[in-house]
Length: 64
Image (cartoon, rainbow, N blue to C red; front, side, top):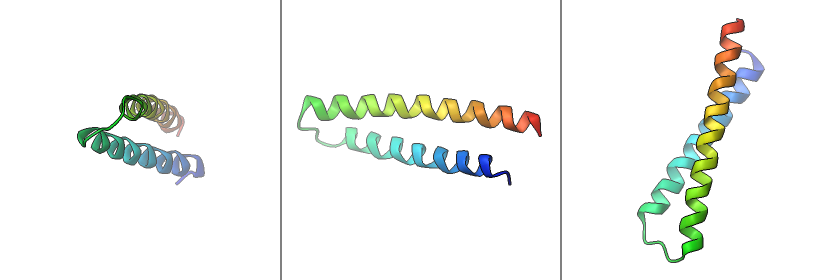
């Protein structure tokens, strides 16, 4: 497997794990507005990053 694809797949898995972790955090008893807002913002940023990675993977696979 191409090193770039391998690196992107690793990053994708880490972002997916982070999203799952923060969504679990939001299901719990949140004490502060900052905690809730920070988690929501992080999830939004991570989902955007996943979209970027998926687009990059698609371009790479089309080139192969």
